[in-house]
Length: 243
Image 1 (cartoon, rainbow, N blue to C red):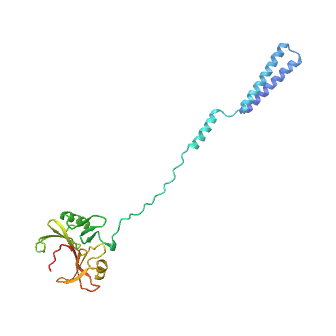
Image 2: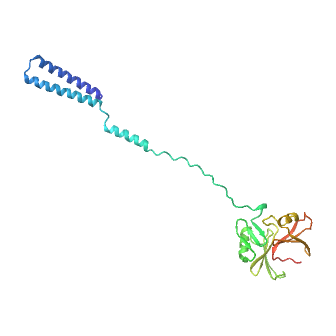
Image 3: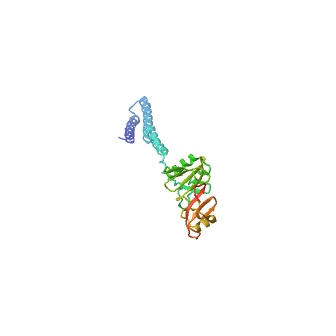
């Protein structure tokens, strides 16, 4: 039975009792004391009816309110899932690239440079140059010898199988000759005279070696003095060339 139904039943019973008491009093069959007592009970019964009615209409117990508040708070305080992270696309590396598809070693009029690395100028220590080039070429020199008959005196030659040779004089780097490696402008073994002219405007002359050129520290020999003649020897600094 619900609280409202229970209150209604109790109120009905109390009302019946009140009517019975009133009838007895109004009928005059009882004394004045009984009349006074009956009037008091009728008032008390009216108050009880009112209390039950109020109880039936009262709000739910505090526990229910607390539970509802807790549920609302849980909804409010629920932490929303973090949004999925958007991948940040990082920019590609902008390391400088060598022109003309140059190799890892670029020859210069005053030494050699490694792409993205150090420059070994003439005068650099012999062992430093050998070790650096060995790492760059991923191979050790295939030929090492002392050349006694070269013009400036004894020269130590270190040659690699890729066609690069380094010349050392008194423990320092003083020259190179090459087949595969090229200059920063893309000039090297096999380049034409026209390409050489466009890059360096060299001095070209005839010698006991043939059609020779010299420019910006570079030296070499051409097949001929024709525009399409190719470079057949290419070097810089000290070398051991018999004239």
